[in-house]
Length: 274
Image 1 (cartoon, rainbow, N blue to C red):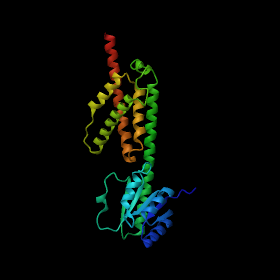
Image 2 (cartoon, rainbow, N blue to C red):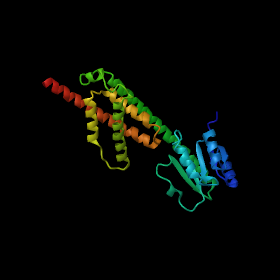
Image 3 (cartoon, rainbow, N blue to C red):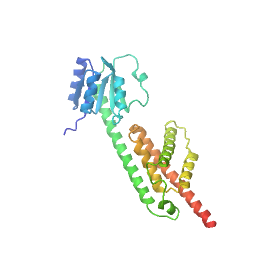
Image 4 (cartoon, one colour):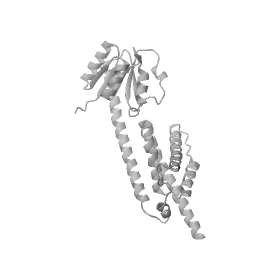
């Protein structure tokens, strides 16, 4: 099986299409061609290319609309593009920040050297990003495994919480409600990091821990809520944001766990004094 990268070119100008195909073929890539949006969609579904080169202005529609359609389809959110434009206006004006996971532009006329260089850079960045995400997931899985091991031991602080838990059913309304609250905490942390507000919702996190304490929840329950959140989130956002969610969630998981342990410790101390 070939490990060469596949590139789909959607361009209606036959002369330019042929020139691009020759340059990319010479650079060692597998090239597929389409001269309309309709043919481009068919080739994309059939060939599953690693990169798309799309002319913005095509006879049967806009290349931007096709790019948005593909990246809004589950499983294709991270599809990289090079958009080719012959217009004098800046195509960035029509693109929102989170429209595409990876995008670059070439303005006609452009050199084939520039095209091949951009292509190589995109694939290099892809490799680095893929490796980083793989490492991030390994760290996340290791930490979750460690928490599950820790939560499996009966301690005097949380022993009663392990015996019977109202959170044992992952499909219950209560678990759904808590997962939504946990999601809000993580999303606020990610927003604070993106916009550099520096605001940590400490009160929200303490209130969440207090609710868990009231329900006699233990580490197993918190890990379950954490896992449920990511099982719903992994396919709903881009890989860039997912990495931020994992990073912030690790700290939040530890922080809430600390609050929860303190709640049980103080409760035990109070009971002994009685």
